[in-house]
Amino acid sequence: MSSERLTRLLQQVRQGRMSVAAALQRLRSLPFEDLGFASPDHHRPLRQGFPEVILCEGKPLARILAVTRSLLKHGGPFLATRAEPAVARAIRRLAPRARYYTDARVVAVPPRPWTKRGDVLVITAGTADIPVAEEARVTAEVMGSRVERLYDVGVAGLHRLLGRTERLFDARVIIVVAGMDGVLPSVVGGLVSCPVIAVPTSRGYGASFGGLSALLTMLNSCAAGVGVMNIDNGFGAGCLAHRINVLGLTDGTKAGA
Image 1 (tube, rainbow, N blue to C red):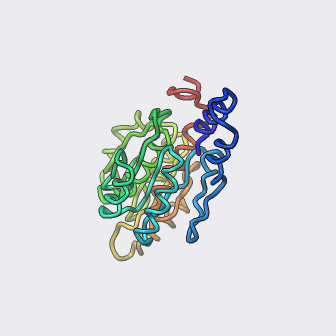
Image 2: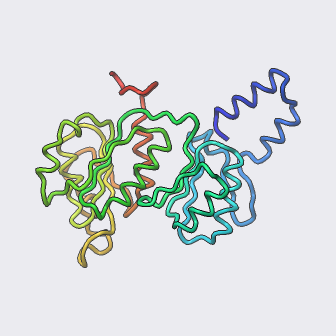
Image 3: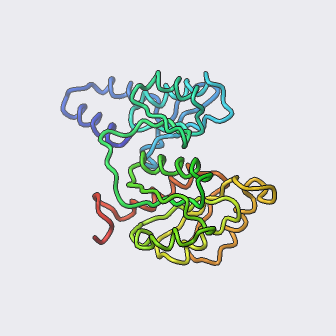
């Protein structure tokens, strides 16, 4: 349950439009609900500002849908990550206004109203990194950040990035997604003053070791202010970028603007 929904509920009780017993019935599944195989955390929106997210990968469809019903029952935005098309179709039957982002493999029910603030920039080294970048973008957007994309600007053609440095300087947070040698976050980190979130991907040839090479490069970056996520963790990057992005924001403008 979001803080907005809880506020409306308390106002209804105060105004006499809802009984205390009815309010308690609404709140009975806080802070979590026991489904036997899972315990959806309905208190998370109050603690962290966004509800629990379903990682669909490796889970039976029936369990995914059971958790989906539990989360949708409490309203607010919703995310299901690593969702294959068949899973997405099943979720959308429960939530008709949900949207499936194919590249990101994310099913999203955006908040109402959907207000986006700040300025997050998502960059990829190559087009093979786009799925992870899109997972990060969709996550940050549904959480409430304004996000722009700058794709396929890796170090194999560095002029593609250097020709857009003004855009880099404007961002409040930058997510850099790269596989192969994983060096692009260091380049970006050496150019800008804002936080840079590096995301290694599993894209690359044999000696990339499924993204381990890129991960180690990013962990050993000589650029200051670069934080590193786990391999292919676009969701984690989007979540962190959003939290950083909205610090100090009270409206749709940048802090200090």
